[in-house]
Length: 542
Image (cartoon, rainbow, N blue to C red; front, side, top):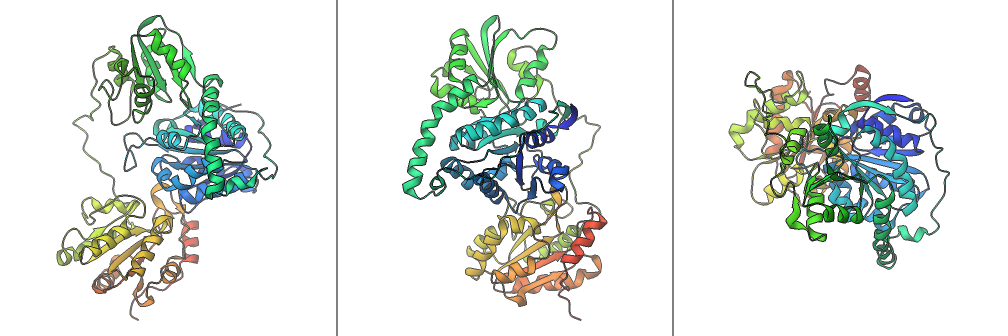
């Protein structure tokens, strides 16, 4: 059966057809569509598959591990920086091992289309010492899912599947199975003590993980996902991984590939294939999307560093996405082609949607900047990050999910007055609550503005777990009720909101102002749901 699928949708369909029981994720571009696709399937709607948005990536990883412990197959999906959040559980799950198959799907974002950095998740997989898969196209992404779950259960380890933006968001025809594998029955591990990572058990588990590495390498040599493609010109050998294989082959659409090539789709690296490649060829070009992950390893452990060319030698660009021309230049087939936009096109930076409540919020903050000065507003990750741009120019820092409140506290500790944190409702429950608790514990004089639009709006408008809970959370964390304010970001409340903001900035302790107004892009149904949950009256004098 044929379907036209995004790469993310192919991953999702492949997981479902492989007997998936649980899908856990936090929205993050370019990974979001994996979960959304499953949520729309009949199997999820009728409860056969649990497909839910988690509060953050660490929680998603732990929820999936819990389902795996019970013997079911589970998948967790996130973007690359989300793996930073999930790292504690991810790394330790390699020590405990899994029971039911567990696949961790991570979508990297070369060129930083919607991200703070270009980090390469393969380093996490190597660090955790777990098997990794890296599809080259949507069909491979679909087919790999069944293999990934089988591999996970065979070695009782989580499997990391790495995608990238171009694969996640490109659409093509995919051949899918007519029938799906039945879900696992509920069953617990034979030795549940391995999930208790106290030193006496963890030491045993770690030794077993190290011992599995030879088996994982042998699997990578024989599974069929890594291939040695023979050529006739031995002046150059090629190692190419994942989606970069497409960039290579686009240069040879009208003729055979003349070079010995090792196509990498599974890790650990297949040493035997690579050693054969090095012995047969004068130089080795490494083509990979992301960091020079393979290139660094080949230079190190094979001892042929003088033969290796790629990103570290300047033959391929170190930053941004690869493309067929960049590969052609490295092969000596073409001259570099400029991908700059035509001069006729004007810059169109991202901007907040017309009517967005964040616009009114930032206009109010900006009105106080002449009084408080620059370098006092610490923001976070979300739509409201656009407050850094004109016409607002109202925030000073954006680092990672949840950083705004601790950074405001740290600045306050250094003597900065006032110190204002701006954080979204979903980001607050994702990773902002602990920062606020720290500020309460230390009685820090900071003002926390929660931009509550009742949605994870930046990634498509998923419902926020914070909906209806923000006031109670702030109070439960110890913020004085007199300094928890609810305001509505509308022009008619401008003066009242500025007055409240000014008073809370002057307060010498932690305060919270909840700017509450549903996202303008939400459906009427979702807006009514937000209205049902958000029942607090604004903090205006009657």
